[in-house]
Amino acid sequence: MELYESTIESLHSRLVKKEIKPSDILDSVYRRIEAVDPSVKAYLKITKELAYEMAGQAEERINNNDNVTDLTGIPVGLKDNMVLEGIETTCAARMLQGYRPPYTATVLKKLKDAGAVFTGKLNMDEYAFGSSTENSGFFTTRNPWDIERVPGGSSGGSAAAVSADMCISSLGSDTGGSIKQPASLCGVTGLRPTYGRVSRYGLIAFGSSLDQIGPLTKTAADNAIMLKHMAGADVKDSTSVDREVPDYAAVLKKDIKGMKIGIPDEYFIEGLDREVKEKVMQAVSVLEKSGAKIEKISLPHTEYAIDVYYVVAPAEASSNLARFDGVQYGLREKADNMIDMYKKSRQKGFGKETKRRIMLGTYVLSSGYYDAYYKKAQKVRTLIKDDFDAAFKKVDIIATPTAPTTAFKVGEKSSDPLTMYLSDIFTIAPNLAGLPGISIPCGFDSKNLPVGLQIIAKPFMEQDLFDAANTFQQAADFHLKKPGLK
Amino acid sequence: MAITKKDVEYIAHLSRLEITEEEKEEYAKQLSDILEHVERLGRLNTDNVEPTYYAIDMKNVMREDKKKESLDKKKVFDSAPEIKDNGFKVPKII
Image (tube, rainbow over all chains, first blue to last red; front, side, top):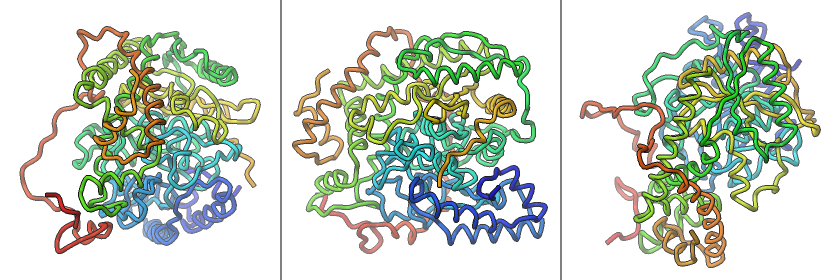
């Protein structure tokens, strides 16, 4: 087995035994990137110089036994909406080409302090607006399982890179499902933490009441390691919650005896692909055989989640994207007055989906419409949250499909925005309620495309997600299958 | 709610976007479709429901009004489109 195929756990063990050096792993990963990224196109930028510098520092730490962590020397890819000082960060938007941030995101600083190595910046839907990575301002990433198909989005590059072994782990961000859905479509393990678990400082904002940074990995055990290093309160993010971070990996369970799993009726609807449903139900069966108790539950307001989201998220986005005005950074078009400068710069710099969301958001927040749309949506958001609160009085976790279908073809859904929005149908509701969720591979359809199982837990109970996911990954080996890339 | 071309022109102005004639038609249709879908929220009775702005229980976080280290000016200006003296140069405002 090549080093690039390995996991955080297994590489860490070999690194501390000094069987391999961090630069050996990096060499292997970069060779892999050279071989397959021309077809997958996950990376916007490779940061080789920085990576080898970090690998050198990691090697020194290991040799001197100086504060070595389980991430020291591990290559991690970064979604390009997280700022790294001095290194171009674009959000895959032409608006930000050439933008070199004057500061580093807290999460990246934490991973750097732990000794991780940054391989490069990964492709995404522009500003995280999308579910397929087709809205990238530069190019579309392809699904390693079938390069005619999308990897999902908006963290498409992050999911594809892990799936194709082009990094050992990656970071993504999730607002409406942008980690979970691409994880599902690419057959990897992706976690969206509880809102407030991980600092958003340095994450270029989309929807501030929804955004979270999260890890994508090959296994649940690796994911637990990543979160331990990423989570925690941050004075720079006043929505981050001051709550102890468990050593998730150290207490990771391999069985879930007595754990109660809720299966909501409303997620098994028309529009859910028959094969996806089959694989998800088989996965639930596996969890049952592993000791869990399965219970039917109802989350009655599920069908309104998309409507709430497509009012709230664009509203917050329209406010967050007001800063892209050509004044301090980003693209600037010449004009002889300020308003025209704003209009021309933004028209030139933003892609179609971005403009659509900004206008939608501006409309629902505008005078005369705020109560009817934005306030109403936030009230229905309460009803959705209440559904989950009631369900969690009876069960510990909730299991659903992550996405209604497996990976679709490039271009298949891009002509109708509404059709694209509906691919987020299962991930949105828990996000509106601030809940943590993980997607793990639970099977393949007849086209050999991965199917994802979404598990949702109570706030700050990521441990339950890891325990359930890890238990599943002892009983089934879908997460170990690799796409046949040449 | 049908969004007209005039509505789109107004929203585009509020959003500080200079969109083309062709885009006005396209966005009018797409925004109308999305809003039609979203209007389903009107079916639900939310008379006695409080809005949720943050799903996780949060309190306002304050700090001492004391000067702290800020961003390095040189690094901030590194990505600026146009600088003059100690500021960002922009077209005339008034």
